[in-house]
Length: 74
Image 1: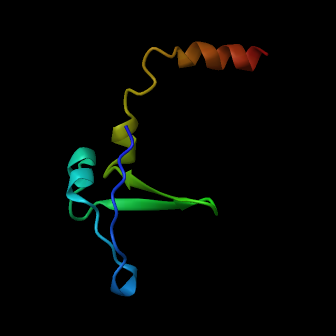
Image 2: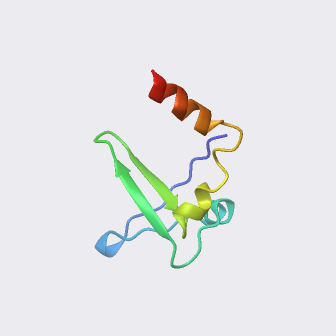
């Protein structure tokens, strides 16, 4: 479900993140955000405090070792 929320840009380019979005994504004071500009739109991505830890376990069940060996044989 896509929600539309509006904020204003104030002095020096500052803006607020709506509370509902902060709660939903666990954004807290001191967290970092990445702004992605593709020339047509802007996306804001919440960066995890420890990016390596956030990826841990994401490849489970993928049999990555076997895929690597197959691709090397090819």
